[in-house]
Image (cartoon, rainbow, N blue to C red; front, side, top):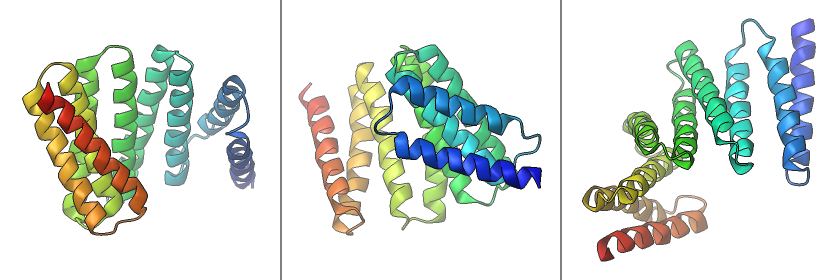
Length: 212
């Protein structure tokens, strides 16, 4: 069937991109991703897995554009990723991974806003991402991935607050992140090395704020 053939073609293109990702020039990767994205956009009623691919593709395009300094276009791509993620969550609201997809997309959009100097917009994105991840953690407090996501959201919020000179609020955000990361490292969450690096990073950020 045509839809099945399209799915196979998309999968092959995606695997080819991932094989070339570390070696190909950014401009080539960008055009390759845009080609895949254009093919996906032709589908009138995308399935949940296809919406997930749309969000992932838009995040990848946005990340490349951000690296290339095209911040305005990066913001547009990340907004498209948020939109695809929200559609995905609306289709299957009981699936927690789709909720996480919203949080990831909003964090990426916040990064782009911050690069453009849109501090207020960035903070809003990070706080909305935090709200989503907090909800996930209430569902499953033992999920190390979601706990790590929560710690990342606190760091991003802390960085923005610190940049605005709101060091008291920034320190509070960093402390929350540090508490989560210390707990994850003690509990032996995998990969241990990453969580230990995260603990060191959180200590450094908190120390910088406290030292002024």
